[in-house]
Image 1 (cartoon, rainbow, N blue to C red):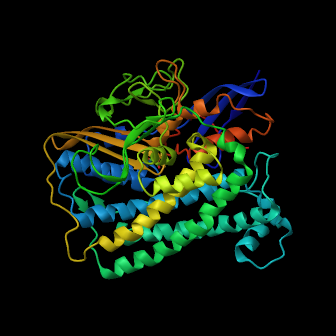
Image 2: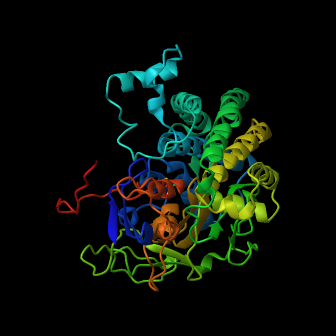
Image 3: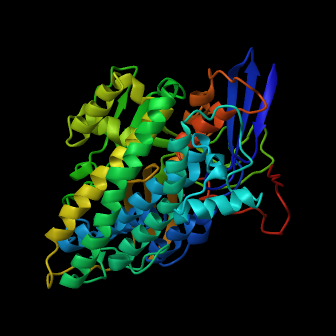
Length: 519
Ligand code: NFE
């Protein structure tokens, strides 16, 4: 019996440690530890409720737009304007958030996970004139291979030309992400912290110029997604098809849904491009309705002395680094006491089983191409495919939404900050279900809680010992070479973890809590 410790896992956002106990070449037990603390809830206490919209965007540099969306929905509901958002405001919010989704999904495939499958050293002998490849070759010829190495060796299988093409796309994807940021800035102001989303709608007016500029930039992104991103994912899937049966995990999926299609005040009934819901492989992927009152966070194995199994509206944040048996700064979110995976796969599986188009048709065609049934989706490659399919659907819908904007019509509804109130903002972020909860007293924030996607996916064992989704996806995995555990990092990265929400490495007295060694 041996132990593999990967600390930190690179090419993700934030600091995650994975410990895997291996017996006979198979992972018997896995532990996922979030090694940084996110104290944003404490920072928000006693502040003006409107600060939540600004401060929660600082939770993370990758998905600030997700937090601006969740906090805005949260304040909409606490201020009682959730049924008054004008169509222009609703659509602009979707365009801002959609731009961030596209940036995020392209980032994940090319700059975080592709290097698990694509061998950039194929460019070493390159003698052509493609400027993107020449850029990469310069790194390789100069012997300075970072960020392409260090890496785990022993399982690079793509044909040389596919490696070269994908390496060119790696560089091109950087330009596409810039373009997605520019797209967001048209109505959002700028990245990373958009200024436009506000309770009641947005602050940016509609003009023909903005519509035309948005459409023009979006077309280039759509071209990249259709002709480069999706074909690259399919090329990887064709060669690494064993990853359709590796890293499945808990098989329970939860989504709050995302991209508002109306302003129905009950967020569980609001029509969304991707609907909310739950489903489970164990129950034959039957659709189940979402009831947010069943969400709790358990803390038995987390460095908190807070009460356990509390609903987030009553959530507590009391850090306790000395807690016996704890191994993570993440809590363990549960729905009705059960473990759920969140993210693009959860959204697309939920949409698929409900027959939502175009998800249903696209997934059917991908499954047919690989001669596979829906169970193949519950895997490493299923997560990558779901993310790419989702990028296409979101980009195509954005092209329609921007043409529904009406210049000259209102973009926001007036609101007043109430003396006391409660709110809930649930949406899906690129990485999955994201919820913000607020309690207002004396016009100030009395309590604020956020449960982010990676807390769902990367949380530790819960009060009854059930491992979290990362842990379940790792357990049972065969490891060919314990010195190069590429299976394990491929599994974890397929979830697109973001621990960046946890931003504190020192305690208030300035004492170091942990030291990370990169190798
Ligand atoms: Ni920090 Fe995020 C997304 C949110 S994930 S990137 O997507 O919310 O934990």
